[in-house]
Length: 84
Image 1 (cartoon, one colour):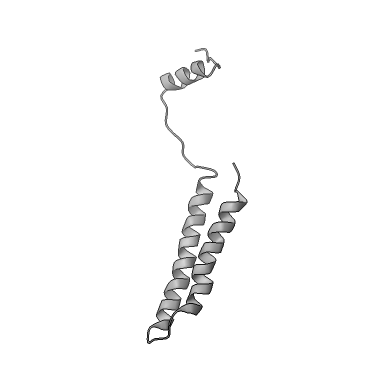
Image 2: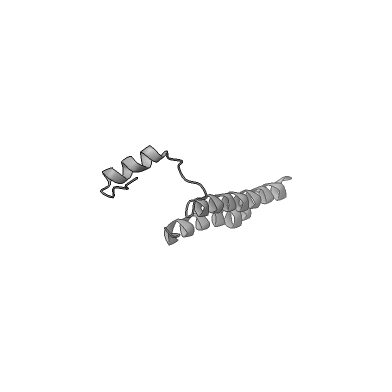
């Protein structure tokens, strides 16, 4: 399973709006700079976390641990019997 283009484009666009567009529409005030930085850092870290989680699902490092009995049962049910 490879990466699909649609989710990457959608989430990149969403977090791009949050981190690039929204800081320009923050109302003026004494904490405007802080709000802008918070929006940019939030967008960057959330996008990076989402990307890492998405990519980890493409090639999982661990899988289910099955007993020998379960493997033999699955092989028999799926039409590929394994002989002992």
